[in-house]
Image 1 (spheres, rainbow, N blue to C red):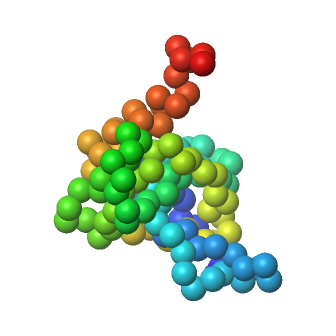
Image 2 (image 1 turned 180 degrees about the vertical axis):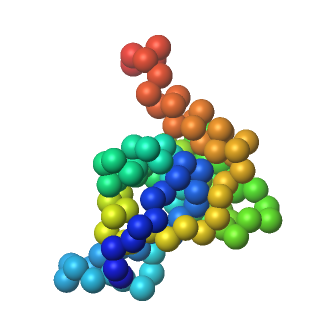
Length: 118
């Protein structure tokens, strides 16, 4: 896969391809939603993503992807990961509606709430 000029934007659902041990991309990948702002992503060459699963467990940090989008599943707002998007391993699928993205951000922010010092 060649280097991409695409920069992930907060709220976009993407497909992230993994590298094999030999440096090539595997044909399978995984869906995720971008949560970091485009300005950061562009400068850093990295982006923060929450993975998407097909298995709903009723966990409090899950956010369902609304029906009618090109992607389906459950966003796991407590499993943030940083990905190097400049490698060309990230492909845009669609945009998450603002209400659902706000829910993801609220749940992710709850993990960093400085009020809770336990």
